[in-house]
Image 1 (tube, helix red, strand yellow):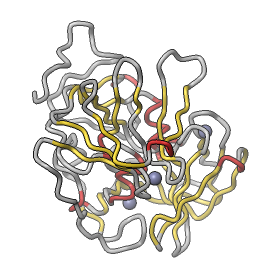
Image 2 (cartoon, rainbow, N blue to C red; image 1 turned 90 degrees about the vertical axis):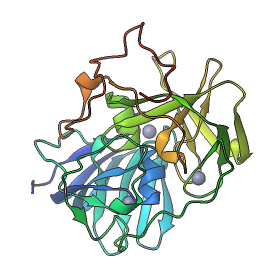
Image 3 (cartoon, rainbow, N blue to C red; image 1 turned 180 degrees about the horizontal axis):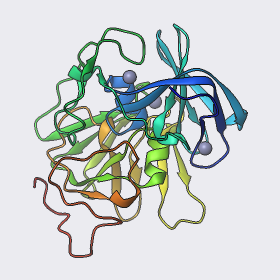
Image 4 (cartoon, helix red, strand yellow; image 1 turned 60 degrees about the vertical axis):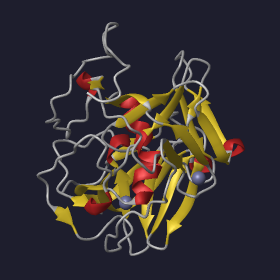
Length: 289
Ligand SMILES: [Zn+2]
Ligand SMILES: [Zn+2]
Ligand SMILES: [Zn+2]
C-alpha cells in the first residue's frame, strides 16, 4: 500500500487525475467489460479509496456498464479512465498511471472468462473470487458465429462487425501510448485483409483520434462506451484483440516495443521480443506460429 499522490492522465493529455488516500492491490480482471473497455482482453487495476480530477473534467465520459461499476473514458482520445465501484472505492487503470513503483498484480478476477487465444498472462497468480464490478465471476456468454468468421463489438453493443478468418499479424505492443490508452498492461492488435471487414451496425458511432505529431497513430473507439473499435485506414484495418468475441484464427507472433514494457510485466512465452518495432524481414503473414 502506498500513500496518495498516485497520478494518471489520458493519452491526449486533457484528463489528469490523482488518487486521494492510499492505494491498494493491483489485479487483473478478465470480465467481458474489462475485456472490451481495454481492448486488450483484460483490465489491470489498482484499488484506491477515491480520486480527484485535476483537469479535463469535461472530457470524462462515464458509462454505467453494469450495476456494480461505472466506467469512464476520455471523449477525445478514448483512454480508459478510473472506474467507480457502486460498493465504494475506485479502480485506477494501471497503464495510465505515472508512478506505480514496484507494485505487481496479485491475482486474476473473472479468470474463467479469459479468452484462450490471447497471449498467456501470469498463469501462476491466484484467482480472485470477486471481479471489478464486485460481482462473483461468471463465464463469458458468446454468441454463435458462422464458420470462418470472427465477430467483434463494443461493450454497449452499439458497434458490431464481422471479419473473415484468419486475421493476421497479431502482436503484443508494449509501447507507452498503447498501454496508456488501454489502461492495462499492453495492447494486442491484429489486422485483416482488405475488404474482409463488414460492419453489422454502429460504424457512425466510432470516434477517431489522430495523435498529433505522429504519422499513423490513430485511436478508434465507441463514443458511447469507449471500447476500442476497428481503425479502417488506407493501408490496413487494425483491430484490438480484446474486442473480438471468438477465435480470430490467429495467434500472437511477437512482442514489439518490449523495451518500453510496464514495470510489472513479466513475459514468459517464447515469442520473439523486439525492443522497438519488428525488423523489416519479420514474417507478419503467418497466422499461427
Ligand atoms: Zn484524452
Ligand atoms: Zn472487470
Ligand atoms: Zn459502445
